[in-house]
Picture 1: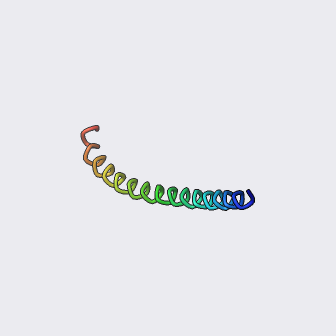
Picture 2 (picture 1 turned 30 degrees about the vertical axis):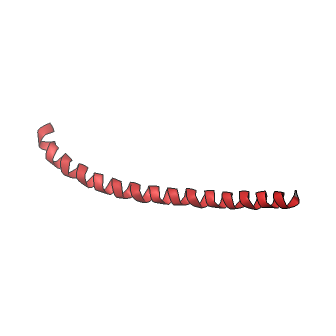
Picture 3 (picture 1 turned 135 degrees about the vertical axis):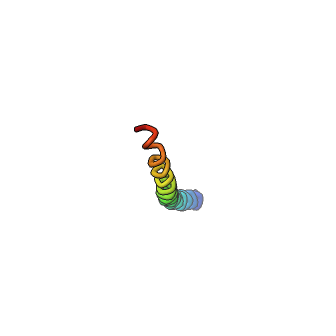
Length: 57
C-alpha cells in the first residue's frame, strides 16, 4: 500500500504541475490570440467605421 500511495501522490503531483502549466499555456495562447483578433478586427472596424460615419451623419 505504501508504494501505491507514493505512486498516487507522485501522479497527483505531476497532474497538478501539468494542470498549472496547461492553464498558463491556455491563458498565454488565449491572450495572444485575443490580441491578434482584437488588432485584426479593430483595424477592420476602424475601416468600416470611417466608411459608415458619413452615412450615419
